[in-house]
Amino acid sequence: MIVYPNAKINLGLRILRKRADGFHEIETILYPVGWCDILEILPSETSREIWFRTSGLPLSGRSKDNLVYKAAFLMQKRYGLPGMKIYLHKQIPAGAGLGGGSSDAAFTLKAIQRLFSLPVSSRELHLLASRLGSDCAFFLDNKPALASGKGDLLSPVPLDLHGTYILIIFPGFASDTGRMYQNARISSAGLSLKEAMVRPSHDWKKLLINYFEEPLSRDFPVTQHLLKKLYAGGAWFASVSGSGSSVYGLFDSPPPEIPLTRNYLTWSEQL
Image 1 (cartoon, rainbow, N blue to C red):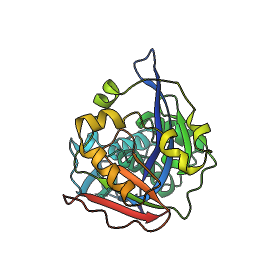
Image 2: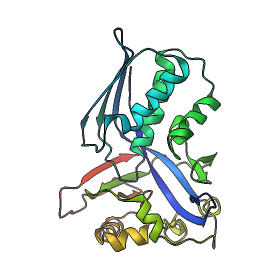
Image 3: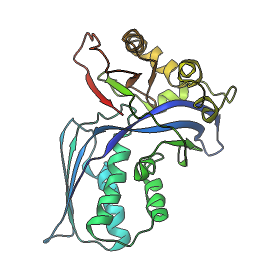
């Protein structure tokens, strides 16, 4: 079975308060985009081992630390499944704020459910996804959602960007999410994102704020440089995705070729 785990962008990200458990209370709007990895899962006829290999963009760490392996192991242990052969071709850069690893994990859960015809409810899949990562569950439904709590509480939002063009730029470095949280402001002042997103789109620039943009720009001034280029190229909204490092712009027409000083990875599509 072959599936195509897709990326997401964040439309605004507010850090409201620090929780007693050490995590942060946030709110952000998650929106699926078409930049995707390629994931193949096959049952093994000779072994109960999980064989896992990757290609494409490089990944750090051991195979057993990858969320795909963890998701497969979780399903195998819970439902007594045989061994599997899993092959992941990475096209979504890691550490980019695009949710590639979380998407890979969620699609692994869904693919294994289908591959072995498991009678697993949607609620149970969501509970399993939440054990793997805060935003994993978003990719099970893959529909625009407001994420709150630690980012794990999802509620659908009536947001449709159909027909909008997007350009995503990955500047070639990974963002350290922990460091971004340490240096980002914490505030619940102003409009909630649910209120802000229904305002006219020309207001989004000042209302849909990502609190990680400021610390990311301090560490990597290229962030602001790229955001300015997106606006200069005609974007009506541009932002950092997640805790970075990727930035993106939304356009009413196909985006022009943005002059970049380096050979950055980019993705463009009509949503």
